[in-house]
Image 1 (cartoon, rainbow, N blue to C red):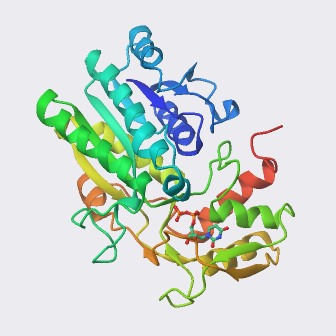
Image 2 (cartoon, protein in one colour):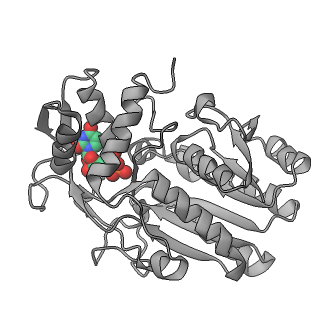
Amino acid sequence: MKILVTGGAGYIGSVVSEHLIQSGEEVVVFDNLSQGHMEAVHPRAAFVRGDLADFAAIDRVFEEHSVEAVMHFASNTLVGESVQFPLKYVGDNVTNGLNLLRAAIGHGVKRFILSSTANLFDQPERMPIDEAERIVPGSPYGESKYILERILSWFDRLEGLRYAALRYFNAAGATSHRGEDHLPESHLIPIVLQVALGQREKVQVFGGDYPTADGTCVRDYIHVADLAQAHILALGDLDRGSRVYNLGNGNGFSVLQVVQTAREVTGHPIPAVIGPRRPGDPAVLIASSERIRSELGWAPKYPKLRDIVQTAWEWHRSHPNGYCK
Ligand code: UDP
C-alpha cells in the first residue's frame, strides 16, 4: 500500500515510516522540515518538501502519487507553547489538518490515521485512563487534536472515511537510526541524556510537591517503536471501522525514577534539582491500552523503562548533536 506520512521527518513520523517500509509498504513523506530533519527521512521513502498550509502543494502530492492511506503526524506539538500562542494550534493545526483531509477526500482516499494525544484528558476521573474517560483538553494543543478527531468522525459518517485516532502518552526511546531531536529540546528523557553527555550541567525537575509517591509528576513512557507497531496494526484493521485508542505502557514512572534509571543506564551521576512546577502539567497520566491490546493484539515490545531509556541512550551517544553533522 502507498502511504502518505505527513511529518515523516519528525521523531514519531520518521520511526513509523521506517517500520512501514520494513513491513513492505511504500511511503511518501510530506514535511516542511521546520522541525523535522532530512536525515531522519528513510532513504527508501519518496520525499516532498512542503507545507500543509499550502493546499495546492498537498493536493499535488495526491495528484502525483497514488496514495491509499494517510498518516498525519505534522503538527505543532508543544502544550506550553500552545497556551502562549493558541492560534498556532486551534488555528494552524486545524487548518492544516483540514487541507490534508480535503485533498485526501478529493482524491478518494478513505483511510486516515491521526496522531492524537493524552492532552485530551486534563481532569481524569480514573487512572489508568481508558477511552471512556471524559474528554477535557488541557490546552489549545489538546483542543486542536480533539477538533480533528471530531471532524474525522463526521467524515466517517458522511463520506465513509475510516480513521484511527491514536492518543499517545509519552513517546520515548529510539531505533538504531532514528531518535528524538528537537530544537530547543523540552522533553525529559533527551534532556536527562544530554546531561549524561556533558551537554548540560543538570536537569531541572518541574515540581516536587505533587500528590505522588516522591512528589514529582508521573507519566506513561511508551517506546516509539511500539507506537509504530500500533499504527501498522490500526491501518491493517481500518476496513472494519473507525476507532480511537489510548496508547501507553500502562505503567507510570515519576520524573525522579526516570532520572534514576538514566543514571543506571549511563553510569553518569546526572545531577537533578527540584524547581517550580511547569504550568499545565497534571500530576499523573497513565494510559489503559486494554482496548488496542484486545482488539488488535497490540503488545509493547519495550514495557520496561530501563529498555526504553537504553535505546534512547544508544541513539544519543551515536548522535551527540542529534541529526546535525
Ligand atoms: N520534566 C521535568 N524537567 C524537564 C522536562 C520535563 O521535570 O526538563 C517533566 C515534566 O514536567 C513532565 C515529565 O517530565 O512531568 C515529562 O515531560 P515531557 O516534556 O517529556 O513530556 P509531556 O509529559 O509534557 O508530554
